[in-house]
Length: 224
Image (cartoon, rainbow, N blue to C red; front, top):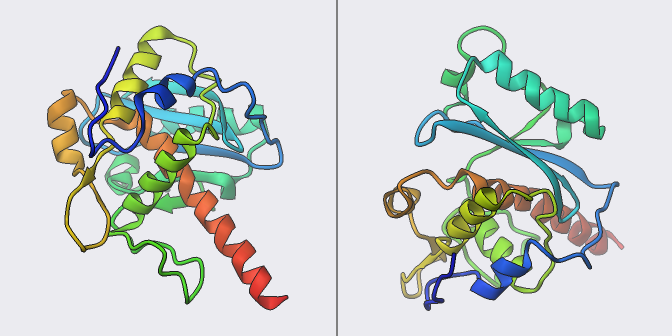
């Protein structure tokens, strides 16, 4: 599927196409993560993906079912790839209703709150201002894909590739003048796509870890 670039589209169309063939990006087995989108609303499926650094090596799509079934599949991914609980990132929206009153999500997993404040690398970090954490991750994801630094190795099915391509093309900024950088609201993206952009959200949420790592490195440099 082809898309025409427009000024508000954050990721170049050619860069999205390259995402599926960026064989120069090597998997980093020291940085394994699982990202799960299990929000209740806007989709008929749950998605989860395994990343080795900037390489997405496997993903699964699960029909909506009992919460325990979904947790079991995510834990199966953890066991297969050797991913610790604290390296699991999940969309926190709707999780309470998803799990119900008994138990909870994977203990130690990291919740992603899109409307949370952006993460500052240090007290002097004013190079960019973002409306929220989701915008910060979205702009970072766009930078990485445009620069050829990500590889969707695990996306083999043509229908999946088309879905991810379409969703990434709808990652767009909102012109707010001098106000903090903002993404096009998810409600509008859903209306344009006719579905929730769950697949691209996996890549976006993964960037929270990268931002946190950059912050740790910055702090270490300050200490030295």
